[in-house]
Length: 443
Ligand code: GLV
Ligand code: MN
Ligand code: MN
Image (tube, rainbow, N blue to C red):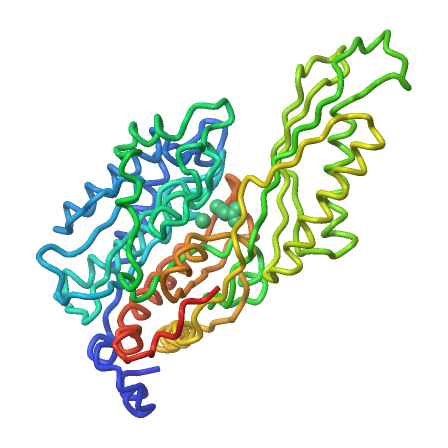
């Protein structure tokens, strides 16, 4: 769509029309993504930059430097979230357009999950600053801390802190029991002032997150832009299986209470819930440790984490209920004691239809095909949906690989996505300025 097409359509969006020719600096953004990808580069492959670890801290330092060099003003909040905005007083008092994602990864994850959305948001703000484009609704970049929860088991830590929805935050620990407060202090956060990280209702006009798809759909369809319509909800269950450690050679088979065999039944039952019974969309066991983990001892204890996901809250709840039933069945059959605890629940949410429309218009302006789709991965956006309308843009993931070293996206797709984000920020201005025009918070 050209500038005159926009006018002809009566879009009436002065900001978008005036800056229809503006583009991000693709080479600069790609270089920054590569530099950021070196922080936490794992000798075993991929990137291990766990939330609230020294590596995530180094990523924040990197972002701070880049923002400083661009003349942007940077702040970190007590939860470890980093914000960048243009210098000077806010252009207008009132809610801001928050744009960003996270910089932490899973163990041996990729260099784009989260990082792309943060670096692209920085690039958009920098281009607007360089071109002195004044937005009626101020844009603020955010890098949320610890979205993955891979080290400290509190996924969406930063976005929950911003929305005031962290539950008993200081109880969170790593798997060895080291408290979050220790990590947070090392990360420049302030555990005792977490309440100050909360943004009040009305402070966010909308939240935009650009992300890699992390699945195969866009690549398979040959479409460069995904317009996300909804994000799955997810429930993580921590499951402790207690049997009895015994000699592997002398304990008769009928006398055993083998915790690993019981855990294996749970792993298979988890898979069945989604793959065969279709109770919910996905069900996965991703974490498991056996104790004492010795070849010639019957395993006495196993800890595992299983999760279920769905975009429908009823199916999500049913997935959890069936998983709990399966644990009870395995406990009865195996003689093991099985404890089940919900470690995290996130709700499925919808993105705001008016923002979907703005994203489509931005893609049209750039001549890019787009496709409306759900997100099977969780995102900070689904937490911020408690506070404001959300919009999400996806770009293709090569072979659909993510949360693994092979995660990749073609540079051209990364640049396209960031340009869509730029024009969504511009296009959203009219939407956000219109009374009631941004729709109501979803989810
Ligand atoms: C977040 O990365 C998720 O697991 O979906
Ligand atoms: Mn992830
Ligand atoms: Mn992510």
